Amino acid sequence: MREPLLQATGLSRAFGAVRAVDGVSFTLPEGGSLGIVGGSGSGKTTTARIVVGLERADGGEVRVRGRARPAARTRGRERRLARAREVQMVFQDPYLSFDPRTSVERVLAETLRLHFPDRDAGPRIRELLDQVGLGARAADALPRHLSGGQRQRVAIARALAVEPAVLVLDEAVAALDVSVQAQILNLLADIREQTPIGYLFITHDLGVVRCVTDEVLVMHHGRVVEAGATAEVLAAPQHPYTRLLLESVPRPGWNPARIAAARKELSALQESPTQEA
Image (cartoon, rainbow, N blue to C red):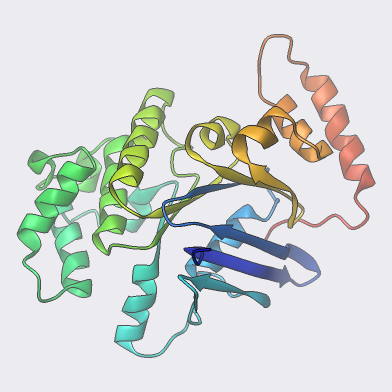
């Protein structure tokens, strides 16, 4: 069997008495797409931050292409850059990560210059803009002149510029209109067909999970309560929390009061409830 592109084993993270992540393990094959789904406080975002290196794990290990990920505070510029090229992250609101005075072209040029100083950035910038569906006309634009969907495309282009093995998308379409969400998800599907990149989707939206992932983990109170092929898990959920998530999606005949009662009943069954910090 081929080595997994990304492998997490026994990840754990506590904040005081709160166990935000508790023994989480999963694998992502090359070119694969894995969803981690759960409500607020489930531990999904902390798990993603551990994978990227923005959060330190108390236990467990993350490996990319069979190599253990270096610590977040790795010394040495080249080692830090090599680590960044393994995994990149796209956030829900990319605007906060852009310098409002910096054009799209300069954002991409600075990233390319940092990671590939010997390359001519010009052709690669044009290639990246075309790849994310923006084109050369967007090169001179400032972040504030772009729509939310366009800014997310720039964020994806910036992440792709370093040629990562894994792209982590943390609620990357949650703030967008439904029609724009569909465009971004189609874009990501196209990129996946063109490259060997692996996707790790962090989301509460089961519609996103259904559309763009092959496998899914369901997290609740820091633990994985269900995992498997996306179509199978969503068609025949085995865990009460997974069923609750599916029943919480508004549809004809939806009963919010019944969902709230089911949520309380499930919470009461938890022996030691925790919340994600």
